[in-house]
Image (cartoon, rainbow, N blue to C red; front, side, top):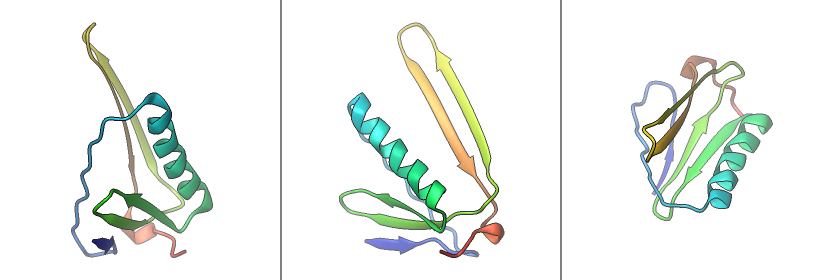
Length: 87
């Protein structure tokens, strides 16, 4: 299934997977490359392919939590769909 996210549409993509540290770094590097190149960010799984137009200006939110046994790090990027650059 391939989905293009455009202004005015409400679509959600959620995917969770267990990865090695290296694989997780590769996923993040893919996102970083897409943001650097501009135009479109592509999110892929074995069954879905989502294309998201990106903007020049973004909000970056970073959080971390630890209870001694479990560590959670969240990175959230958000931007206005109206300011997305067509690529």
